[in-house]
Amino acid sequence: MERRGVAAAGGQVCMCQAVFPAHADHRGQLSAGQLLKWMDAASCLAAEKHAGVSCVTASMDDIHFEEAARVGQIITIKAKVNRAFKTSMEVGIKVTVQDVLTNVEKIVSGAYATYVAKPVGAAKIELEPVKLLSTEDHLEHTLATERRRIRLGYEQVFRNLVQESNKEDTFEEEDAVSTDFTHVQSTELVQPPHANHHGNTFGGQIMAWMETVASISASRLCHSYPILKSVNMFKFWGPSVVGDRLVFNAIVNNTFQNSVEVGVRVEAYNCEEWIKDQARHINSAFLIFNAVNDKGELLTFPRIKPTTKDAVRRYHGAVARRRIRLARKFMLSTKEDKPSDPWERSNQAYVSYSNIAALTHLAAKSGWEITSTLDDIKIWTHEEGDVLSLKVEMQVKIPSHLAFSLLSDFTVRQQWDKHFLTCEVLQSVNEDEKIYYVTCPPMTGCKPRDFVVLVSHRQPCKPSEPYMVAVKSVTLSSAPPSPEYCRGEILCAGFQIYSDSNSSCTVCYFNQVTSAVMPYLAANLTGSSKSIEGTALECRKFLEMKGSKY
Image 1 (spheres, rainbow, N blue to C red):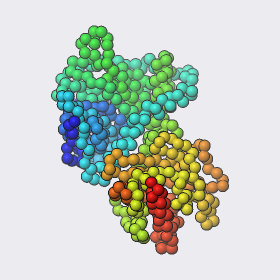
Image 2 (spheres, rainbow, N blue to C red):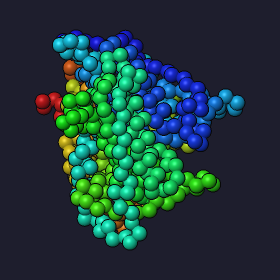
Image 3 (cartoon, rainbow, N blue to C red):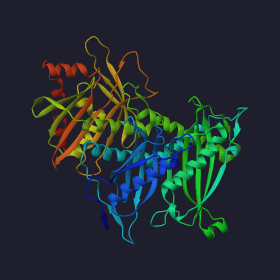
């Protein structure tokens, strides 16, 4: 087996492009199709720089468009390999625009692409891991694994939501437009300029053609020029080559007040297949558009009416995908004041992702200051604006995997944490996620507190990475607030466990401080209490006692 990879912080490519009239639409803005071609080219170069061999696009997802670039402006596309798996890589893409007159820079678009290394001859390829040189490298490397989990679990979540959607709509609106009216078909011949040096059609070129035909389909409803806002996923099922005929079929799947989803299916034919009408399905995607009037106000799309069994399937599929998009948008928001996360099928994967991501970001922050050391237990604090965070670090004389197993099970936490009165499992989501109901003793003059928390635990993919146990509050309809308790909230907390040797590990506890934790921290910082150190000592004693039995 041949191992491939460069000794650098992943493949990194920076591409600068001036927007000329040939790249723009009728509004003088960079066309989405042209931008997709440039994004694919930059990310492919980054993948090939890391792999050292040719790479092909497997998919591009999480594509969103924010700021429009106009003629005369300069766009910068930065592509970087975040993580290499055995034969595939995740490449992060960020596009910014800079106005040459004002020098103001804004984000245009972002996406994540997956590329597969093509073996040379019959040799098998195993990609080298990405060398991580910065805090950002470490963050994206960790989160790439979480994003991969979401991709792998997407279909099951989607099927569940489609089943729910099937029970809801009746299609009885009088003014609804038939989906047949929006069907558009276009055929393209793949010529040498559309392909790479191997003769395979550029993925970005196919995406650009798909955007064009989808835009035409959407325009039949809004009678205006649609604006591409996001793409669910470009999924490449198979290759096409120079000489192939590509047939693009686009149709509106559903409308949602100010947006419309268009589905596009791409089929390829060589000469023989063309005569026999034997198509190869090579690509599918779902593109989301909105439209504006001359004043820049969003236009309302008419409701659509599916008229065939397949149209009904696509209608409900669009509803399910929208719920997933909204869940993702809510969960990955950077707002600090958003409420606890509702635990529903549409956002389970993103709640889990944001749980792990929040702990990863908190642990990776620079500027932690040590405030006390007692019995080899170190307490650190971190201030960022009005946000205060806590870190407790201790060495434990048991293997890291045992510490991880014990700290992942919150039902035993009251054995060492006096702040836990009771803890019960409300829902076992999967083998890596559980939802717990926790009660805590009252503070002076207050009611006892309770929490509903999601606990997500992850094992490391390689020895240098930590075990993780992430904790955050969620809202569960089966566990509403009770008048007997004051419902508390955990924004971000959890453990990272690093292996020091076969018989010892370093346990780090993190907590983004809320009002429930602040009195304990304040007492510790003023020296009037050693509650945090005391809890840490009990934790270490518990772990080492349990570990001695194995």
